[in-house]
Amino acid sequence: MGRAFVYVILGGGVAAGYAALEFRKRGVSHGELCIISEEPVPPYERPALSKGYLLPEDPARLPSFHTCVGAHEERLTPKWYKEHGIELVLGTQVKSADIRRKTLLTAAGETISYKILIIATGARALKLEEFGVKGSDAENVCYLRDLSDANTLVDLMKSCSGGNAVVIGGGYIGMECAASLVINKISVAMVFPEAHCMARLFTPKIANYYEDYYKSKGVKFIKGTVLSSFEIDPSGKVTAVILRDGSRLPADMVVVGIGIRPNTSLFEGQLTLEKGGIKVNGKLQSSNSSVYAVGDVAAFPVKLFGEIRRLEHVDSARKSARHAVAAIMEPDKTGEFDYLPFFYSRVFTLSWQFYGDSAGEVIHFGDFSGSTFGAYWVNKGHLVGSFLEGGTKDEYDAVAKATRLKPAIEDVAALERQGLGFALAI
Ligand code: FAD
Ligand code: NDP
Image (tube, rainbow, N blue to C red; front, side, top):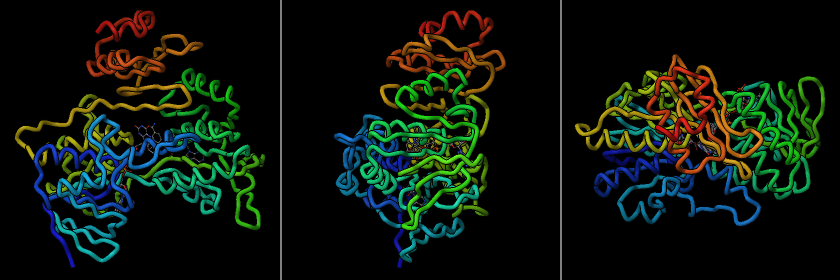
């Protein structure tokens, strides 16, 4: 059995939702577009899962955070897809893809064919087993990538109130989940291999600010080490985390955030890969002209820095998806994707944004003992990256604008003195 569509989006996450909105805006006809997703619900704003979804009171629940509310656009509910004649094939995993024949085979045995395919398969969480540690399947160990993981985490938090959690990993998941655990009245110990949290983006000075803030909320940091094993009781529950130096951290629950791998396996050997993702051009088109890739799985040219990059953030998923659809529907009117990398996070009452590239010399500015501070990155004589904590909308817009312009910086000391004023004056 089989069905045929003009456009198929494989994956039903953030990028799929924004692609669907763009298709609708550009006039896709009823019955032309299909979204196939392993998840049982239509696309939603994944960032909510480590923030509003985990609040002890009045938590965010679907349908409130379906895409595209995160960009203040329409909310794409199941009814929306129906009204616009967009077929949702949910709870369905695609098992194989045949790029030459332009077909996808689902786990249910259905063949779905396309004229144009958009790959939006995102990524999967890395498992501890991939680092030689067993125990991921214990009932009180969880990861966080999708709604079902978030439900597991919520249930665990409810059953562990007043208890101890160990958070493995000092990246985005680790930092955001640690904050949520504290808000849910659970004591947190964070374990990660680097010298400070968010090591790939934060400077030691920036990291120190957040670590001090977390410590003031009772979070313990165990840095420069990794876990070596779990202590597991006869019922199969983890009771403690054993570190490489032999020390033991009691645990009622464990949250693991140790990075991701893009879901490329269906296309290995069929499409060109780079940076762990599917390599695409400035129109988000892969090495096969009928196949596009967007979101976490796409490695695309970041014009501003003259490099192919794979980004793992929601803004890039939204914008790359919209650009791909524009390139598909109106190829003559659509130029090359020209993206300014943008990352952000919100924890407790803190909130930061980062634009550009964290390369070169760092110039910190502002009041690190107060609530507004930041940093600029200057590489080869130009401003290439900006970080700001506690800014207003106008201030964030200003650092974004300044970063995109990549102004020449002749006097680093002057930039340091001007601080945020430098961006505001541009
Ligand atoms: P995803 O949203 O992961 O969607 C991929 C979809 O493809 C999923 O529905 C998956 O089930 C489906 N799929 C994969 N393989 C198959 C298959 N073979 N068959 C069928 N379906 C398949 N970024 C930020 O910038 N800010 C944040 O605050 C932020 N918070 C986050 C919080 C959490 C908990 C997580 C996990 C991520 C967060 N991110 C954040 C990152 C952001 O959510 C991702 O960059 C974004 O979701 C990527 O979108 P995507 O569509 O490429 O992939
Ligand atoms: P990150 O890549 O942000 O962080 C992973 C962390 O785990 C790093 O500190 C890493 O160290 C560490 N680590 C790696 N291996 C081990 C190990 N064996 N033991 C202990 N620590 C280890 O990934 P996350 O899992 O935090 O996030 C997953 C995805 O979700 C990312 O794509 C992220 O962008 C996205 N996300 C984004 C958010 C946002 O933008 N606000 C919020 C939540 C998720 P090392 O650097 O040495 O490898």
